[in-house]
Length: 207
Image (tube, rainbow, N blue to C red):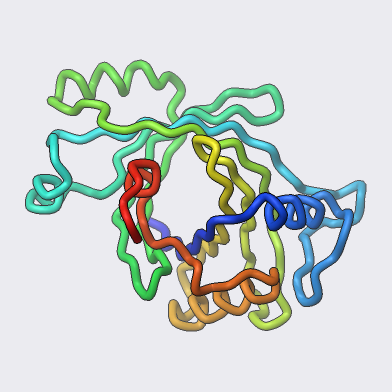
């Protein structure tokens, strides 16, 4: 089981375009370095992610009362002309608008087998989303030894940036503070962080 600490922020079209230029190496940002940013080793990745969420219950309060993980998901991901599927279980805790997650994820060869199992076990699909994303790994001069994953994304036409640290050793408080400073280095306002789940965002629930 891994620890995942992340922050997501909604973007204007101008902010989205500026960060896209950064991950395309068209401009730099002081203090942030893309890993492998020499052209021959450049590691920008483009994804199309289709997520299906499953539950045994019809309502969110029933999921909480029965201690069901917040995320039980099949992700089908298209990357470099290859399609892969993953099964994920995630338990989420939001601290000051920053997610600290415990996540288990594994590759699945045939997602349809898992869908059939869910149906037999009493699970049903209750939510889905589509994410078009471009991502890079970065280092940040204010938090040495930590790798940040910066992902620009359009989710059901909404523009966001997600910044994630997958780390099991460092101090969670140090990483959360590092994420806040990373956001400031991107010339974004960390106060605009969005602590809602994607289902809450797409259903228009107020933060």
